[in-house]
Image 1 (tube, helix red, strand yellow):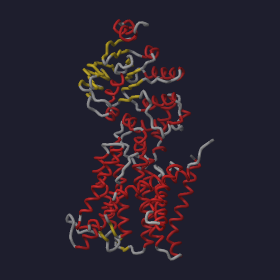
Image 2 (spheres, chains in turn brown, orange):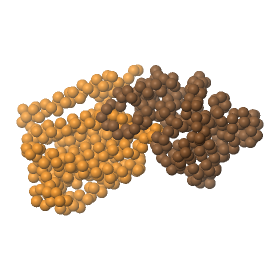
Image 3 (cartoon, one colour):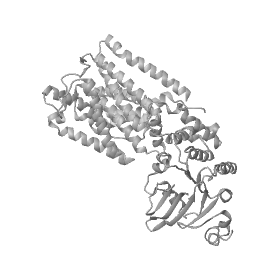
Image 4 (cartoon, one colour):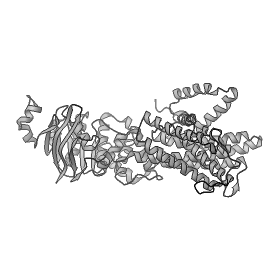
Length: 247
Length: 326
């Protein structure tokens, strides 16, 4: 069964075709990496998977449901969680508040007006647990604006995990992290393998080759190859188009 | 943080004592003017608190809040007018009973907020400001044109509403009714802002994109906040109509919307109690400066500018938030 199936996806911006008849299938519980040079159309693809960008044609199917016309929140509630390449956090809230909101989103309607959300253990306990998983337990009460860049990246991942997603979309999660921090995230992601479907967009090739079950190579809005790390390494098209002469 | 909360609690306690004692003290000096002035403060404070819910917490800069204030006032005045004239409105005889008229005022304002909010919340930023203003102006001109209800000249109420059948003649009793309702509004809005609902509303102000990605359809939460704020403003308008025993389109003029915004910003955005302080400052400055000159706003302008420059968190923030560390 495929967790994510994309067929014939096209997105044009004026004369530019950012997504050009793209096909992609990600199996359930697979960790699938998407790599590609700058300008290949990764951001546009992510936008269409999450629902922020509407494609001109083609379909996006998640767990056998066509979600092509669904809104961002609808897709999220159906089990999609994404982390942002450029951190998107609620700056005036604490780290724990940010994670608690992710948990709150999964506990039904938030039209609850009277009980103090910050004293609600059904939100706060799992929020602390998610922060501990990414190594931010001691920063829980810090305002986001007081966190370092690397800590904000970790918080992004804590929020994504707290959504208990079936399909996780990670947009360059290691970007801007120190070596130590990204090692932690690699370890965390490998511990998640097999429990959820993960689509990983990442520039750090060491991380990608270490983690991914399969890779897809995106060039000029098309997937030019899909396969295991070994298959991709030796694929002549990929070498030509992407890995270039130095591979 | 801790210390700021302590100072807030002390200030709220002092303000509560002062407001409860005010009519008694005023009576010993034989002054009814002070009670009337303070009642205005309570009503404006209530409307400012409601506006703070959407501007301060929600980040939705509504420039049409006076419309809901005015609709609340007109609802009460029209119901009393129809009863006095013996002419039913929509098959209803009208009423002079607060327990019926005030909830109806909230309902009318809430419905208007629901319709205007549903349309204006599709936009954001400067467009949202302009469209909320446009709807308020629409309501304003409707009442200017309604000659049956006095048009430009407004509509007088022969007497105050009755409360549970009893007449409210004594200005002190009316003052305490307003004080009690203001306390209830602050309590409820305080609970709302701390609740799950409030976290979504505030989070959407801070990062709408993040909230959508988490699965929140933020517009629904914003619309509910908009309606709650409209209903509270409607209650404020109903009280105002009873205080002045008069309503006019001036209640919903765009300058009135501006005054409410000034109160919120002066007091401190997102500070719950701040808007009441802002309303107090506004009324005090207005009543003292307007004795000096008819053009008191010329003097008031620079005061607002100074506060914006030196107390960016408003008066409440300036009083309660001390520089941390360093």
